[in-house]
View 1 (cartoon, one colour):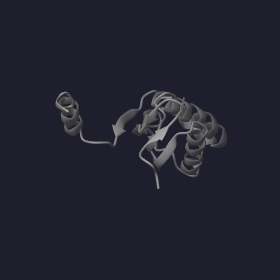
View 2 (view 1 turned 30 degrees about the vertical axis):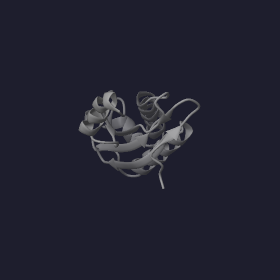
View 3 (view 1 turned 90 degrees about the vertical axis):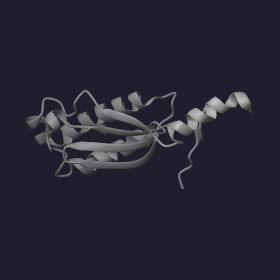
View 4 (view 1 turned 180 degrees about the vertical axis):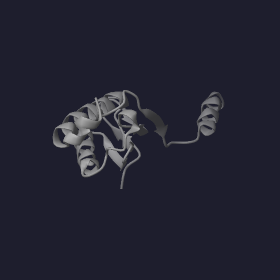
Length: 132
C-alpha cells in the first residue's frame, strides 16, 4: 500500500502531481513498441530520482503520469529528465521517430497537484487557527 506521506532528511511531504505531455505536433507516434519502451524509461527515471510512480498511461499522442515527487527535487526537474532521457533513447531505438519529427516532445506540459483535502477545508482550517 502506498503511504500518503514520505520524508527526506528535513521535510515530510505528500507532493502528488498529474502530468500530461505530447509528442511534437501531437503526432500519434507512441506505438509499435515505443509505448512500452517509454513506460520502462519513465519507471527507471522515477526510481533513480526516488519519485513514486503511482500511475502511467501512454496513449499514441500523449502521456499521463501520476507521480509523487520530493519537493526539494521538484516536478520540473523530474519531467525535464523524463522527457530528455526518453527522447534520446526512443529516437535511437525507433528510427521512425526521427523521420517523422524534428524532436520527440513539445517544450510544454500540463501539471496539476493532486490529493489532500479540498481547498475550502484547508482554507477554513487555517482561518480557525487563531481560535484554537
